[in-house]
View (cartoon, helix red, strand yellow):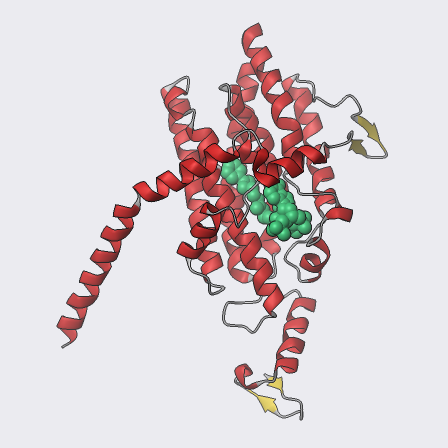
Amino acid sequence: MYGNDFGEPVDDVSQLSDAEQQRRFDELIAADERIEPRDWMPAGYRKTLIRQIAQHAHSEIIGMQPEANWITRAPSLKRKAILLAKVQDEAGHGLYLYGAAETLGVERAELMDLLHTGRQKYSSIFNYPTLTWADMGAIGWLVDGAAIVNQVPLCRCSYGPYARAMVRICKEESFHQRQGFEILYTLSRGTEAQGEMLQDAVNRWWWPSLMMFGPPDDESPNSAQSMAWGIKRHSNDDLRQRFVDMTVPQAEVLGVTLPDPELKYDDGHWRYGPIDWAEFAAVLKGRGPCNRQRIEHRRKAHEDGAWVREAATAYADKQTARSQRGAA
Ligand code: BYC
């Protein structure tokens, strides 16, 4: 139970003044409690969450494309079934996340429109092409590996619906990471040509995977406030370092070289060379190798799916009319 400015107990928190609501919100954050959809929250907190959750959802949906490119060309029925399941999981992640964003008062259609018109971002990583089968392994190992490092702390995000969606997503990402590693491990024990294909994929995906964690801390405008609000739990650079420390020993198991001549072990960490932030900035501005193709494909898929949305709406309207008739 909360007290108003006069110290009187109040049951209905919606009767509290804005200052009291803010104080209650600050107390919940300080106590590491969860904020729920009906709770009062500062406008900036809501806006930041909508931005991050929507960007995350868009990444999952756009992230289906590079891998879908290989479903028909997977080298065996088993590989095809696994890849199909993984891509379907990503569609599911997008749906949980759009659902979480909707609890903040935005419509899914509005978010899709922001994606289709380039007004909301999706992860830079999905603007790179998938040239060979080894790219399926590299995406699972590096991209999903980076996603896990970034997303496990989000299971403790201060916003309840986002945190809960992340629990299931992380479990599935963990399967994705292992299947990618297993593809690469198989290639690492294959022919010389398969070994070369593996190395080439790792060379192309390594640096873009490090960029997934976002700009360096001193150039990350959102980090400080997001960490104060308990949305982000670690800085971009801390998570990037954690990923590198985790991944270097795995590269040794695969027998691949990471494309960084400056990589060296020092004081308990694997120190890496400079990241090409100009490339990252170009990809964010829409000048990556596949930006245009990804958005065009997404828009077309949305248009082609219009009949499904219309049919679902017509069916829902029919059900409502039927239950109203029944009630009358
Ligand atoms: N790509 O202040 P910062 C997956 C933007 S899905 C594009 O550090 P923040 C998977 C950032 O939005 C992977 N944009 O931002 C799916 C901001 O711009 P705005 C997606 C990026 O939010 C299928 C500006 O740069 N994961 O794993 O504090 C198959 C300044 O950055 C990127 C998530 O979305 C980027 N890489 O931190 C396989 C996780 N990085 O919005 C795998 C949830 C930064 O101000 N998101 N920007 O115009 C997060 O954890 C955080 O949003 C980030 C960025 C760490 C990504």
